Amino acid sequence: MHIAIIGAAGMVGSQIAAEAAARGHQVEGYTRSGRDTGSIATQALQFTDTDAVARVINDSDATVVSVAGRDDYDAVVAAHKNLIAAKPTGRLLVVGGAGALRVGDQRLLDSPEFPAEYLPEATAFAQVHEDYAASTGLNWTMIAPSPEIAPGVRTGQYVDGGDSPAGAFVSTQDFAVAALDEIENPAHAGGRFSVASADEAAARG
Figure 1 (tube, rainbow, N blue to C red):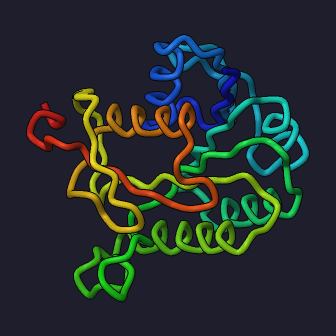
Figure 2: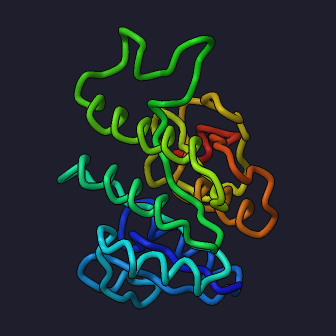
């Protein structure tokens, strides 16, 4: 498959790129600067350039958007809104956040125990999810991590929690496995799912 990864140099995007390449897919990476990720070469692309991003999506079998936007959450939310409005025809896998996942009748970010320092990011990606969920005519899926995601070990085993947290931790490597499994065998089109490493201790290394 021809897979494009926007945000291919990030903590998550780089692992998805490496997993895709290891499975023998044709991988094209995109970053803001075009810098090398170490596993694949990349091209420069601004996620805010809606027309260019839509062309990448339409020219690929699947496109992963892994853009954290920690320097400007408002810009990332706006970029997703503009992309949704452009209605690209290709498949889109968006890396979301854990904060908007549901526990009972509320979102994680609505809990009094939710760390205040993570609220801006969680709120932004909750809005991104709402915008995709309200969209029509778009072939999208959102994959969300556990409340904690960090580099660790590729165990290759993960739990699918649906729209709720699947566990406390997922390694970026296991997250990438889940992302590629979804790309190769779509099971959550038009929705969101969350993943956690099946064996947290092993995944932490």
